[in-house]
Image (cartoon, rainbow, N blue to C red; front, side, top):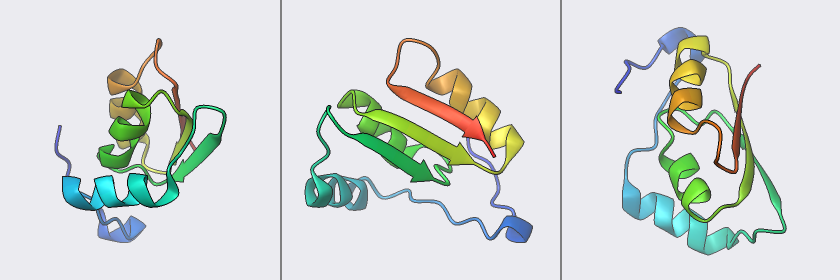
Length: 84
């Protein structure tokens, strides 16, 4: 589900999978770590963290986007989406 970025929230979305892979490779998360993702947006980075089963708390200020991410990364994943 693609949403239009809200200028009032200063939103910009990570969409390049190559950049996401570079981020993951740079910080090499381990299952024993907790990752806090601020502003998961469309969930590009969140998806990789979920695939790696990294415990993740993703904090999203946009309630509509948070609801969408909750439905995408619901129960049974290592991701906890919070609207804050």
